[in-house]
Amino acid sequence: MTHSATRRLRFPSFAGHAVETRFDAGRLTSDGGLLWLAEADRSLGMCEALAACIPEWRRQPLHSLPTLLRQRIFQIACGYADQNDADTLRADPLLKLVCGRLPESGTDLASQPTFSRLENKINRQVCEALAEVLVMLYIRERQRGGRPAHIVLDLDGTDDPVHGNQEGSAYHGFYREHIYHPLLVFDGQTDQLICAVLRPGKCHGSRFVVLVLRRLLKRLRAAWPNVRIEIRADSGFAVPRLYAWCEANGITYTIGLAPNRRLTVIAAALLMQALTQSAAQGGAKVRLTSETSYQARTWPTPRRVVYKAEALTKGPNTRFVVTSRTDPPLTLYDWYVDRGQPENYLKDLKNALQADRLSDHRFWANAFRLLLHAAAYWLLDTLRSWLRQHIGDAARVQLDTLRLRLLKIGGRVRELPGHILVHLASSHPGEPLWRALLPYCAPS
Image 1 (cartoon, rainbow, N blue to C red):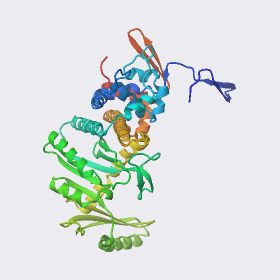
Image 2 (image 1 turned 135 degrees about the horizontal axis):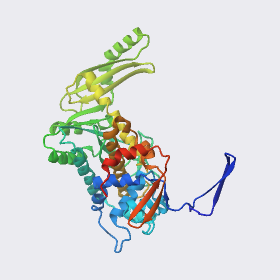
Image 3 (image 1 turned 60 degrees about the vertical axis):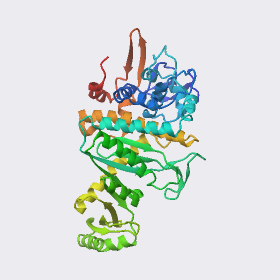
Image 4 (image 1 turned 30 degrees about the horizontal axis):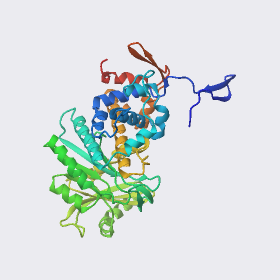
């Protein structure tokens, strides 16, 4: 869609006057908070590090690789996930400025075809190198407050509906649609995204998890030799190979276990007890927990299984968890349920940052896109963590809310001799957040 400076839009009368609008205001931006995205990137050094992983294939490039990545990642962080958005945003004065060009006299940024060519030059080796950068970024940022003694790795898989006959896409019976099946690892204590791996649509939820954890463990123990590591995951990861790998490498695990006939029989007495107590209390909710030593046919040895029996108004509910932890059953199960918070981080990645917009035809181009969205997550999550240090839990908001309060502020950008002046909207309610972030602004 082209933008016309002469086309006028008319609205009904407000306050006794007719209203007319035109897209002709010139050097304005709707994303004044781009300055903070640039500060986060400067602190992390992320875009430069990512760009260093991509081989230059062009003879006379108009846009450097770091500039291309900044433009694309900043656009995603601002809510513009489509490549096509670059066709107009390339002239945004503040986006130009944070990508290293003067807002008025500088040349415009890249358009959609440039990004398409970039994505289709990416292969598996580049994606692996980019993922390595994000892991090393996590290690560096995680230890800013000192070396951790304990970290929790929350594993999750998600569905990413495809947009056509794309490489690696397939129908998945659980999700009942054609998807990609990304694997994500978050730090369950800090909400940092450690790695994002695109997987084919037909793969099992546990596929590649041992391979990814093996590589990740090597990096984590090289950085923190004595750190205690444990993983938490849902029943999609409940496979003997993962249990055995964790036990062989000293990794504590707590993983959901899908019910079967034998487990249902084991939990029957506890469920009856919960239902009896609920009836005696007039239908009140009752939750009980217990444990058993359980050995499936494919397991070489018995393992501890904690189970919950719950009487609810909507009906009985039982859940099972296989674990190597030694906590009492109720404490253990409550700790497992805490993985619901990392699921909110996944929602941030998918909803706020539209990480399911993987519409390239080539598989590795889409894997690259997923990593770009992961990089945008890092920028916004860094800003959220900065705010949390100054205004506490008030800053623990979803990333789309953070973007609305901090980034979406209109402004006029003026290029003056020797400096740039940005006039921001006087009535914007996000001004206190800007003041809270001032300590993180690099000196001019």
